[in-house]
Length: 122
Image 1 (cartoon, rainbow, N blue to C red):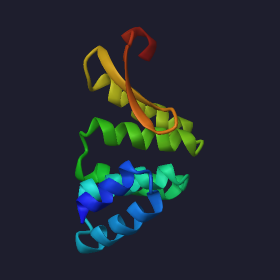
Image 2 (image 1 turned 180 degrees about the horizontal axis):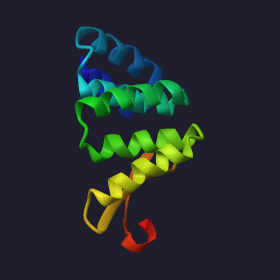
Image 3 (image 1 turned 90 degrees about the vertical axis):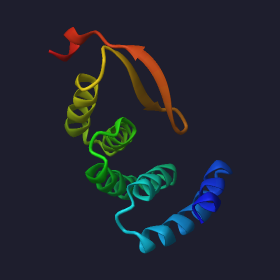
Image 4 (image 1 turned 180 degrees about the vertical axis):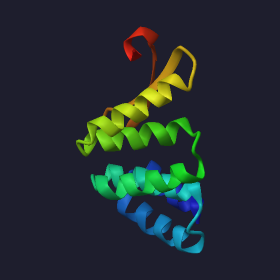
């Protein structure tokens, strides 16, 4: 069932993917990967409050996941919760090497590489 849901995501059939992943989360409510995927689906559907909810739940299971932290912070930023998003982004940057992989939204969540000057965090 997970493969079918991921296929629907690749095809950008978000509502169909949502139905599948909602069924999966009923079977295992603490599956961090499914929670993360639901966060991404809700983000694509522009339901940012639900997206934030699922990213936060996923983060509770995988507290050191850079991609979950990143997507959660982006969602908070999109919700206008800038202070909380900035704090999360700063923690993400501080917890990794100086040459960073930072993520941002351009149509969907994608990865870009940048170099961060540590002095800007002070």
